[in-house]
Image 1 (cartoon, rainbow, N blue to C red):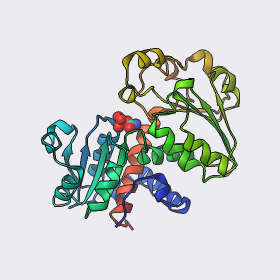
Image 2 (cartoon, protein in one colour):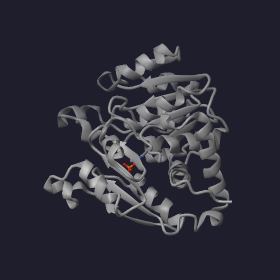
Image 3 (cartoon, rainbow, N blue to C red):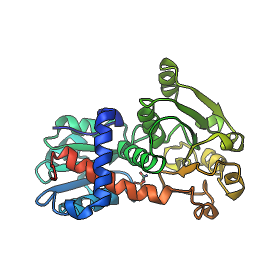
Image 4 (cartoon, rainbow, N blue to C red):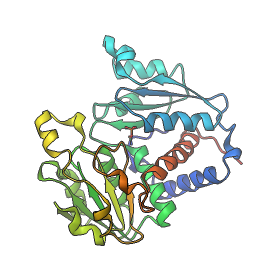
Length: 305
Ligand code: CP
């Protein structure tokens, strides 16, 4: 039995197979419409979510399976003091696979260690968000046609943004990726990630001004400032609008540069950018459904001929 805690749980070869499966699902959805008949997915979300929870649910429904779960810790017995360890043992009696989001880093890992069904980390604190990374990689592969040889700028809250940490973790395994980290001083990338890049001799730069680097980028990964991880409101208010991607800044970019965002967006991308063909963040959401369908089939060990 396999769980998914980090994008590194899959080798690059396994990721290639997962993405090819996701692309086949996109092209031939009818082939997969009954693949998970009789299977149940539990979504245990101790933190708010729109995309991750609903795309997991859509993925299982598209595969002919069923879903159950909770979307708020306060509507579960966590509110009465039940531990994640006990909850997963209970969920294992109800479902065949579980997607779990939790504000505490490592909580899905604790659940996986006691679970008799596969557990998928659907985001743990500021740590990892592996299925968002699978979504990001599939989007890049589908639109750019490759997962190597590019310059990627990651912009915004690089300190607390778990999608950023997961994506860098995954990209370091591909050839010739040049990272540019664009953030205010208070929200720079964690030191442990910088150390990984140094150890592997992977080129990176840390800068403050987005305009400075726009013409060089093949991919711009925008993120929101993570309000829920701040200790005081004052700091959040000061930093929340530090970067706003608008039409003017987009004019500095290459014609084939793409803008990704894990969403939700707050103010960091002006809505006027949405109509730019290089803004692919809503297509990215659709790829999230295909890749989660592929992931459910893979972890449930279901093959479709
Ligand atoms: N990208 C992402 O994790 O979105 P949600 O918080 O809405 O699930």
